[in-house]
Length: 252
Image (cartoon, rainbow, N blue to C red):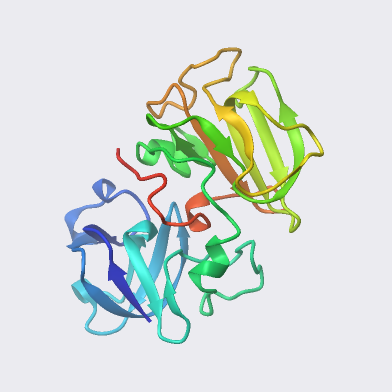
């Protein structure tokens, strides 16, 4: 296997923002470089843990890297543009060392809309003293929100109360769930069967009894908070399953 660096990035000794590490625990690498690797696995916060073949970058075998910045290529199955998690909804028994091709993994999920993310505060991970369990999609883009996958509408809240405001929960046939929070309006009802790409609502900023208020402290007043959850309700980083197609770039 090998990785191709898609944009200038940083190899890190921990899966955190590079500005949280001292210079001895990170090295810069540049777009176009290729590295032979022996293994990889999900490390959370949108990162992968990579084991390199000699000669090791920075004389260390193991590094962490932000997954959207690389392309992974396996000589046996070809290009894998989307990182695969050990507990992928496509095949929960698939081992990390034998990932599915990108077309298999990412085809069952699509971004619910186009927009931008303002960085760590609006990405999946611990921020502001708690787990931010999804990705906030803001920006000056159309506000129509579409189903990221097939499923049945399991829950609808059509008022501005609570931290989630107007929200929709959709359950896939395999038990995985996708959630849409802070909507301005909702176009589906409980028990509706929805198809991937179907219009389900309009992005807003609802929550805590208000419309159009900044909810998550990420710099947006109007945004969609989008989550993917395992069948047991555990939230996962949506970027591990959604296609790396530039729909929601990180600009902050």
